[in-house]
Length: 541
Image (cartoon, rainbow, N blue to C red; front, side, top):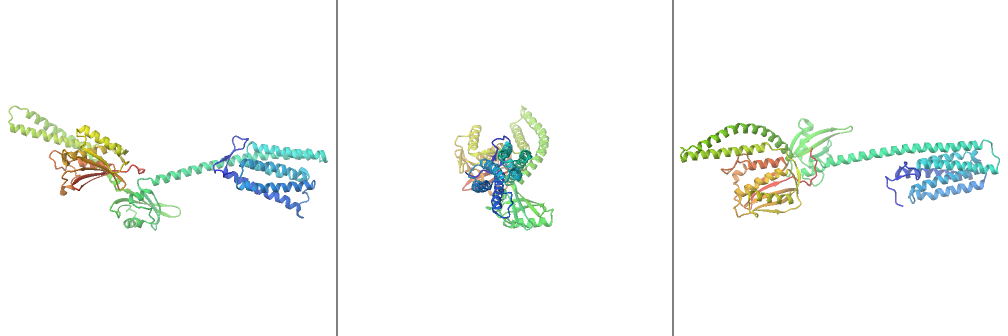
């Protein structure tokens, strides 16, 4: 029989409410076996020893010897069944109690009946039955023991002369059996309840520990706990991801000497609790230091935050400030702008205007519309809500976007070609923001990058564990001297543009912790948008 599972519950076959966990039950059974082994050996050794009490076997020596030897033999035979669990727990516990009732009653009769005092040993077995199985089983054992004592007295009465108080003593012994059975049952129930409560609390603690461990390991921010000697005691998965480490570091100087120096500076001056660390791969990481004062030692906690997340928060604050500013400016500009546009329109309708004057009024109308367009773009940017990130399957989302773009703008069907270098990529981003960024990039590629007969390629790939979209055209590219101004607001090389398209695209990218960049490679202009990977489960706080 295979060992029982730790959470197995053993109920009494006559009880509906009693049960004890497997490990505790087998332990109690083993303890009771040790008790039986000691007692059965004492029955044999004391009988044959010259120092044993004279009461042993005084009534029937042959019965005493046979009963004691059989009691010892049955106890020894039961050893492998208990320690190797060759049979069920319930059957072994019941056999133990039943054999105790039989053999102790026989030994009591062989030693002179209830007057010998052997009957008290039955009380121990009854108590053991209440603890091992409990419930109605304990009362059953008490009844059987009482009947056995009473039957022994009736048998002696038929064959021997009894004292007048023998039946009274037997009755008191039987009552004690029931009392002990009841008390052992109550004790077992309380033990069971305490065990269940302890198990539930242990399970709750284990779940909380597992939950805390999961939260720490899946935090978006990296966490390192180090001692005063800069030995790392704990680090989460985000540390390796943010720092680009293959394995968990053991010391701070293994990550960066600059990080080790920043911690030493903070320990000397607690006000210097913030630093931006330059990693060996050229990336920057934001760090913040704090102390953990435990009872036994003082530890340091270092929080690592992606610089993109830091920029995202700055971007949100900047957009909030920009929104308040542009709303007031737009209101102040739109009123005189509307008056200028209306006056220019009325002036153009005057019959006495010359052709040259009409051309001037047309210039007024065109530039009024352009200024109004600039105001509209600024208001769109300033009213931008916080990003509502969602998991986007690029292999399904991107073809739908291209089909809608072609249908809305009237492009020919083969104007765009989507190439999946890597498939099954998932981005974590606001779908509306992603749509606006790609719309701006694709529109610029159509206007400035390609001839009408050329195709614009959108490549989907995985770069440094991030899904990236490359919008590639065959245009002449952007001059090197103006690339540094490419994403600045109001910078444009077109007389009809507002210079806000790429600026808005970059702002939306940073708002979603994405990166938008430009490169001219192999005579092709390439705008690259690298997105957060949705397959990396992180918890943002």
